[in-house]
Length: 203
Ligand code: ZN
Image 1: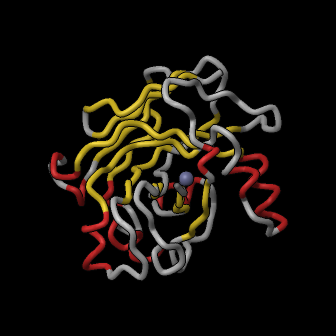
Image 2: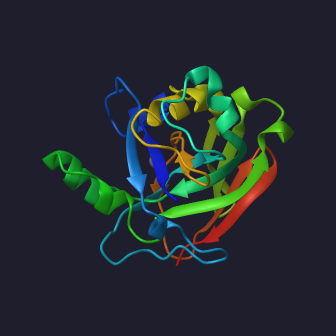
């Protein structure tokens, strides 16, 4: 199983980090070892002082495909979930500055929280999926799939030009604004509409 992540897919988040809008989706991978095991906490790694949460809609691929045409993308997923792309922002800034790959800041152990999934047919409107993240009961991130620069179908088509998609692969579709540092003791709760998708404790 592989995890394909999309960066800079929401204008408000591009602005909050003073990044440039990319010409094409910005893509990076996380290994399967980055996934937090069920019912486990997120443990802040010793190598970073600035771990950020990025809440993101997650698409679960349900069949093998490559070079998928945009008009067929919807056949490649049934379920949508919510997750957190944890990012060691301090390390990422250093790597970005040097033009180095981001993996140490994005793909480390436990950097990937995957919550519950729902069937896309149970969602009211797939083009407008509203999601939120609460930190210690305070709303910190709000997003809607309608604000994505590249929509789910476009992302599936784009990434499948480079990577064969396999059953169970996950696509993290990018974070809206509101990313912030996590601290030991924080409780993170993710919702799609009013449905709770995960609760995660930071240690
Ligand atoms: Zn992200």
